[in-house]
Length: 263
Image (cartoon, rainbow, N blue to C red; front, top):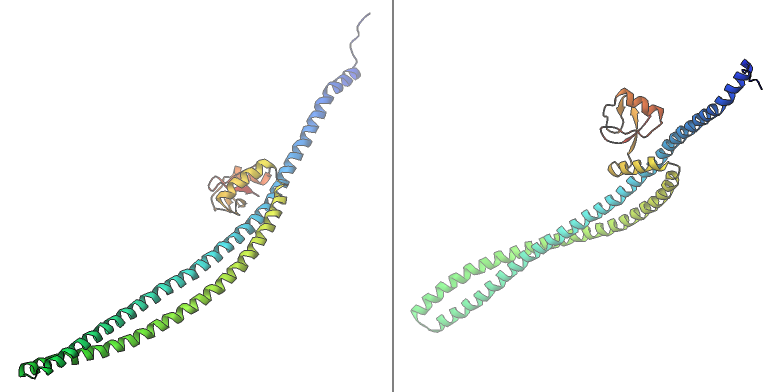
């Protein structure tokens, strides 16, 4: 049987038959590429929602930390007030001890004077007179001590009142801190749940990088570009990188602060 060359029509049909699968594969590849790009772009959009919740988590956690710091500050004031009150009380105890010791010495001298006077001698009378002079000086000192004790008792009362007020402030701060902490913890629980839902819309690779960066920049791991600058750190970016960022096709990070960049 004689073989005949295919006509131009036959050639055309053969070429279309051979190229057909390639065209279909290429078309499908383009469609899939567009789908991947669309998925990545949508993941970036969802990642902004994740970061929104992370920002709230940062705020609420800082609110809890601030409440704890404020409470600790009030407790420190109470502790300082208690320490100061104890110092003033110790001063008062020392003054009272000095006065008691002085009274004991005065009683001893008074007994000595009586003994000397009872001798009925000139020498005894002279010695008694000297002792009475000492007694007069010590009585004056005793009066000064009484005045100091009275003043110190006033200081003690003043610091007692100050400590009472500090304790009242601490009690109020404890109640306020408890309320703030409960409110913040409820907000944290809600934001955590919402974050989990938003994170489910982000491709794992992008979310993994985000979580890594978020550990370094809590609530601020994802940022826009402003012209040719990173909005997160204000670092300069080259034009090629900014074009790639605007295309939203891949994970791109600031070379200065390592944040994830988006248009």
